Amino acid sequence: MSEELGFLVRDIGDAGIAEMAGSPALAAAVDQHAAAVRDLLVGPGGSRPAPDALMNYLHGFAEEAFERGWWPDSTRDWEFVRIVTICWMMRQGVPPSSPDGS
Image (cartoon, rainbow, N blue to C red):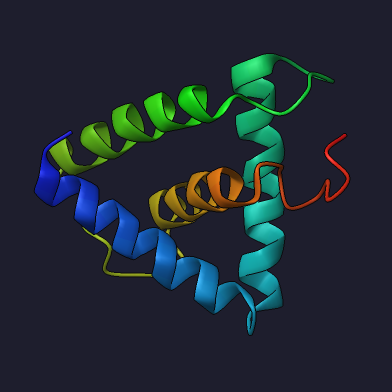
C-alpha cells in the first residue's frame, strides 16, 4: 500500500472510530463487520485475528476498493464501515462485540 493510501486509510479509521461514540447505528454496523472479518480470517467460532492478518486484510481491501474507484464520500457505505472495523479491531486487539477477547 502506498504511503498516501496508508494515511487515507488511517484517517478514515480515526474518523469512523470517533464517530462511533455518537452513532449507535455505526457502532452496530462495525460490530457486524467485526464478526464477519473474524470469521473470514480465523473461521467461525475462531479466536481473534492476529494483528498482521488484520493489517494484510486491510491493505488488500483498501487497495481493491480504491482501484474500483471507491472514495469515502459517505460514512455509511460498506467500504467505509469495513475499513473502520478493521482499524477498530487493530486498536482494540479484539472485536468490539467481545471486550473480554473471546
